[in-house]
Length: 251
Length: 251
Image (cartoon, rainbow over all chains, first blue to last red; front, side, top):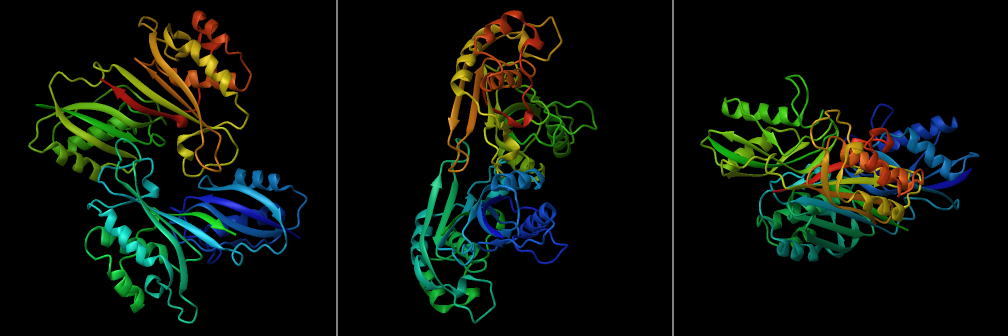
């Protein structure tokens, strides 16, 4: 059995997330496993670097799987791209050592959350941005984000109920950039989160909380209390999935 | 009656082009006129700067229409964006003098044709690019394009059969840039055509012909003969609509 490392891109809009939940659900993992099963006649399990929620996109999701095949990695990639739907693409595939595990070996990840801060519609990017019409105070959001950087217990920033696992994570950086997307949409704000790992819903709860700071519904200083209290209800709302994209997985 | 100038963006994928052809077709013009009719109870005609073909996109299409309304331009824009489908957006609307005519007053237009020159799929931009896997010789295409710049009879570069109207047009510039879209897709080639006007299918036939030069199926020097001969069958194939976007209309 050979071990293959695969890099994937997908638009999450019409999927129920990465993780297979049963045979009837429409998930990225399910689609990939179904296709590799068809290609090989074997039952193949794909291990992702982590789950992405329903509606969340990936520019570079990493996964691995074991396969007994005579095909070259390029032939596997061509086969997959020929039969996958247009909203899932294989952008790289190579054979790796048998010890490589796409989830257990992760050193860090980067997510991007895109906010279009205008009521002028952006037709071409509409599936990848969350629209916020209210003016956003970027400096206040940057100040609030600085409280979240570093190593903290992020229990208040997850929807996960499983109480025994550690909720301590390290966020290396949160960048908030106002980008001039074009002459018309000069109000795109991009949140870039890099860290050693993220809890269930953590990026979207952080984004939602920072947006409330940007709208002056909260003060930046509240972040310290929210972290210390560890209560989900003290943090902000879950920001919509459509604005979130997994950008990079580091090993 | 007030005269309104409107700037529109649309993804052409699921439309049969700009121009209304009857009540049953799905066209951009038909959608807009239907909506304004619903808003006002009047029959409204929208004049576009020009047609775009089925499947062609627009980043900045300009149109105008006359209307008798108490609504402010901003209220009209909000109404339209609330009821238009997500793949059509109004990005600007203002009242203009009664002499403004979006088609007759055009001084120039810019179109962009995007080619993804790799077999690695680009999921997020898939609706806006034409994929060419064969290697493309950018320098040869640039040389060929230089023959097309200037004032010429472009009869060989149109699918229009109407023989009486002038087929002379001036192309101010054709730029061909290899852009590094990202770390994975380093092979995007963008053709940018600026001119005082374009005949039916002209941009797509020029793009198709230039791509054949890029694949070494033709020599750059052939462009002079194709222009001089004026025969459609001597030019290259019509490039697919999906790669084409109307970028700017100048007045």
